[in-house]
Structures are given as structure tokens and as C-alpha cells.
Image (cartoon, rainbow, N blue to C red; front, side, top):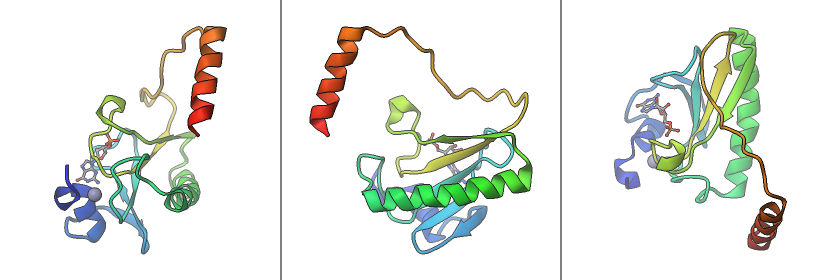
Length: 138
Ligand code: 5GP
Ligand code: ZN
């Protein structure tokens, strides 16, 4: 989706209303419209980045710094027992809105939310090949 037609760009600019809990010149933080749990919210940068591959390091740092503040506010306001920070990139990874965003999902006993994966046994040789390939790409 082009950024001209991006729903989160429109929300970030205030052209489409949102249940905003915080905003500054760089970010808007809003309640997710279809929350996984009570208090599920999203941090969105005002500037359009499709995903983590687009994002610059400075903005990434600011987003996570803001996430620490919002996470504490959620914990204090809601008394959640845990928190998942989720960030999806690409359709295969579950991204449905192609404007970078960070999910903060408060967790409660028996909330039945499923975030996770099935662990597999690793192969030592393959791990070493992967380690070398990834290290070389940094
Ligand atoms: P993704 O699947 O891309 O990681 O997450 C997109 C999230 O955006 C979903 O949790 C979805 O409920 C939320 N969402 C989609 N459209 C809107 C909207 O118009 N307003 C708000 N507040 N959240 C939205
Ligand atoms: Zn956008």
C-alpha cells in the first residue's frame, strides 16, 4: 500500500480519529481497535515506514524508549501481570497494516492470548552456517 493511502498515516496526522493516549511530534500511541486484551495499544511513528527494514536507528531507539513509558503506564493503570511487545514485518509474519507499529499487549491470567512459536531441535552444523552467514551480512 502506498503511503498516500495508508490508514496509519491518516490516523497519525489526525485525519482519521483514534483513541489516542499519547502524542508528540514523532509518535502517536492509540488503543488498538480490535484489541487482543484489555489495554492493547499501538505506537505508530508519524512518518511512514513500511516495516523494520525501512526504519532508521534513531527513530527505532525513540520508539522503544517511548514503549518503556507506555508499558509502565499500562501496568500502573490496568494492573496487568505481564506484557508482550510485538512487531510484525511482512504478511507472512502477520503484518496487516504496512506502516511500522509496535504492539503493547498487556497480559492477564487466563487471557487465552497466543503469542509464540513451536521450538525445534537445532543442528549444530546448520547453526554455525547460519551464524556465519548472518554475521557476514551485518
Ligand atoms: P498488524 O497485524 O499489522 O501487526 O497489526 C495491525 C493492528 O492494527 C491490528 O491489531 C488491528 O486491530 C489494528 N488496526 C487496524 N486498523 C485500525 C484502525 O483504524 N485503528 C486502530 N486504532 N487500530 C487499527
Ligand atoms: Zn503510513
